[in-house]
Structures are given as structure tokens and as C-alpha cells.
Picture 1: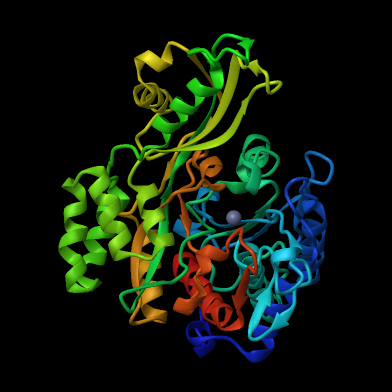
Picture 2: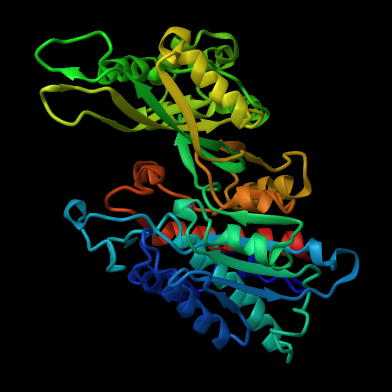
Length: 473
Ligand SMILES: [Zn+2]
């Protein structure tokens, strides 16, 4: 914005921090667990928050209870004023279920204790929702301070439009949320770039704080494997027991597949190398050429277990066994079994290629007993690394944490980015939080005791604000 103040770069007032914290606590208390979703309650709540700031948000509800919200502020135009040149602040309102039995605090209580906001969604991703809303509040207040109407007049100093969109249903594929909006109202979301969840959260390795910025995410393909055997009497075991054949199929699919290093991973390794302890450097540099089994052993030696598993997943197409069913009664040999598998595909791996890989891993002999049926699939999404936005995000991280090392990152999971990719919006995972090494934030996503520290939010909002300001002014 014009007239940058010290608080733009260096932080925010205590009053604003508590406004942000209270917004997050309120969002956590709105139980938007998917399934069933009920995101409409969160969407209506944010509609009131933004309307109070003078904005005119739109709430949509394509199916009962499945609410998403979109709000836009206008830039002053010029060379960056076209409709497709906006910046999109993307997020989702739904959360995964939580079993209170494993929690220290009520997962839907929004407790503020020991310096943390506790609750389901604190990290994934109501914390970012709250930061995005706070950015919209700042923009609206800047307009009001200049005597303008924030809903219709340009925001002082803003060249591009800024769109806020928080969606339903991301945790179950986004079909009732981002996918619906992209299909029905693509113009609401057309933008030069989007900032979304999952990246920008610091992770400490070898004493260095790295900030993985998500530039790509894996796609997925879910298959139902129908295994055929022959029904028989349990008193005389046979070779064509479908459960036994299914077990062999599962064993083969569970073997880690071949490694393929994609561009984001090559770049991530290249940029991380100078910063990792010298003892780890050769091993990491050798990953590209090592045998799959040796790679996993190296990762386990160099990284904590969670990080080793994550890296193992982003250097290959993975297969996870999800559902296995067979049998009717103890004394009947099952003639049929079913295995549902969750395959996660790297950029460049098509659904057809993944299916061929499943066949290859199972092998011809066993495939003679198996039919593969595709249940659902979505391609991977990738935003350019050689782009103004990516470079800007790196610069912003370095400006706010001079010891931090930003890296491009490929996420092993899918987000709403896949829907935005269909209308050509490059999406970067950047929900900036600086966390203590012991917080292990990524473990808390979808886990017990999900929480975010007030200090992480104190770091995050000014970083997000700076990214918006630099991209849009
Ligand atoms: Zn999420």
C-alpha cells in the first residue's frame, strides 16, 4: 500500500493480535466437521464480520449446509487492474473430525491456554482463514480511513483486486466448494495467482528454519480392485481363496515404488543442500541415483520419522491400501474380495500411467484374478517456480525471518489448488507461521491436540500482509 508504516513490515498492535486470535477462536467453535460439513455456519459468521467492515461478501450454498464465501476489494486498476490480474486469498472452512478423548482441550472449544489457540482447524486451516480475513479487514479499513466505500471504491494504494474465498468441502475433495464455484462462477475466482494452505510453515532441520512454499501438489487416483477366486467349503482349503489372493496383491502393492524426482523436488534439494549439516549433504545429493530401498534407509537415518515418510512420499507415486473386504462366514472359502487403494500421483503421472503401474506391481500372474475399476481421480497441480509470485514469497520470508530458508515444495496431498488449476490460476501454498521446532506443526494437522501458538500468528499476519502488499501495489 501507499504510505507503508512500520507495522506493515514489523508486526501488528497487541489489539489487532487479540482481534485475530478471537476471530480464530470463534471459527474453531463453529463446528464445521466434514462429513457432514455444515460450513454454512462459518460462512454466515464471516459474512457478518466482513459486512461489519463495509464489504459485500457473497455466500453460496449449493447443497444444504455446504456454504462458501467470496468477497472482493478493488484495486485502482492500471496495468495490473484487469479482472484476471487479481490476487486470490484462498482457504477452506471445513475441518476433519476430532475425537475429544485424545485431546487435552475441547477440540471445538477454541481455548486459549499456555500461549496456544487449541482446537480442530487451528492449523488446517482456520488460522489462515483468520489471517486472510484480517488482511481483508486491513484493506477495508484503509478505504474507510480515506473516506471511500470499501465495497465499491478502489482501496488506496492497491493496484490489483484482492479476492477472499473460503470454501466448503475441501477435506472431502472440494466438490461442493471450490469445484462448484469454479464450475458455476469461474469469474469470481479468476486471478493472477492464489495463496492457499499448507506451505509457508517453518520446519526446523539441523538447526535451520526452512519455509517450504508449496508450488505443486500430487494428484490422486482411487481404484477398486475386484479379486476373483472360487467359493468353497472351509473344511478343504483351496488355492483360489480370494482373500489369500488379495493378501498377495496387497503385499506387492505395499512395496515402495520407484523414485522419480520432479522439478520442485530437485530445486528443493538443490537449495536446501548448502544449509544442511555437512554429514547429510552427500547422502541427500545421492538420492537421485540411489536404489529405492537405500533411499528410504538414508531418509530414516537423516530425518525424524515423520519427515522421512513425507519425503519418501513426494519422490514417488504412492499406493496406500485403504479398504479390504472379503468373506461371508468362517466356514466358507471366499470367492470374491475387494481392495480399495489410494494412489497419489506426481506431476507428470497420468491416471492411465498410474493404473499401468498398479498392474505392473501386481504382476501378470496375479492380475489374471483382478479387475481394476477407477473410482475417482484428479490430476496434480503445479504453479511456476520461475514466477514473480514465487520470488516475491521467498523475498518476504527472508525479510521477516533473515535466518529462514525458503524452499519450493511439492505437497503429498491434494488441496483446492487442483480446482483453481482448471481455470488457469497458479496456486501457492503459503500460510506463513513461524513455529518452534518442538511444535511439529505438520503432525498436528488432522491429529490430536491441534493448536497454533499466538507467537506463530504474530509472525504470520505481517508476512501474509507484506506478500499481499508487494504483489498488489
Ligand atoms: Zn486443509
